[in-house]
Figure 1 (cartoon, rainbow, N blue to C red):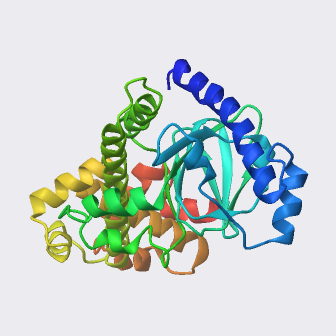
Figure 2 (cartoon, rainbow, N blue to C red):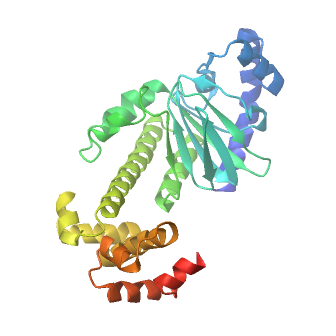
Length: 318
């Protein structure tokens, strides 16, 4: 991300922290610059939800962007708005309902309202950026538009709702996602800032994230199916199961894995074979048959080509 944008984030945060602290002192008697003061307050009122003070003070009525201050490390809290955390530099640990999520450069995690969360690890060399989104904006604009997309219809009902898992995590994202995050930040700090442009960019960002989530979920289902049917699966049978044309299914696998169906199937079969060789007493012939090789010599050749050992040598070594 451009250094100029990062600098604007820090500059605006410095302006807002004074206003935010003043408001917090008036309403709750809490010094927002002191970790112990915040911790003591939350210990006394464990179900307290951070109000929309950030959104009231920000550069937009719907979105607030800031960097994570180390004073808020290990501070379990919840709030009534959606929060997206984006790692610009380093590695952080986001703990949600007791579950630790390791986020590296470019990774994103989205928190539902009411989710109990804290940043369990974030050092001085790390840079974690927060994007806070009002419930009204998310439900009234983002949600309303995304559920009209036929590719995401129905799927969206399962995620980012109060009664669903409290977060979505995204790893190894594309350059396109990074560009959309940067576009959102640029618009937020633009002198000609437009709420319409902000919301439109936010919609594009969520649409791409959820499409990616949907594709990854479908990929998991494909791998589960292939692993469950290693002995008899074919390109045609797998494509039919997922209601794809074989050519389209083959191209889809190639796009997601970089491998053809045949190469992927060999890899999965040999991976299963290594498990059997390590942890069972099955003969090599029985292993070959169980993963779909009726001709044991073919299995021997493929295994040796992949691992540079015969199956028996692999078993002895491991």
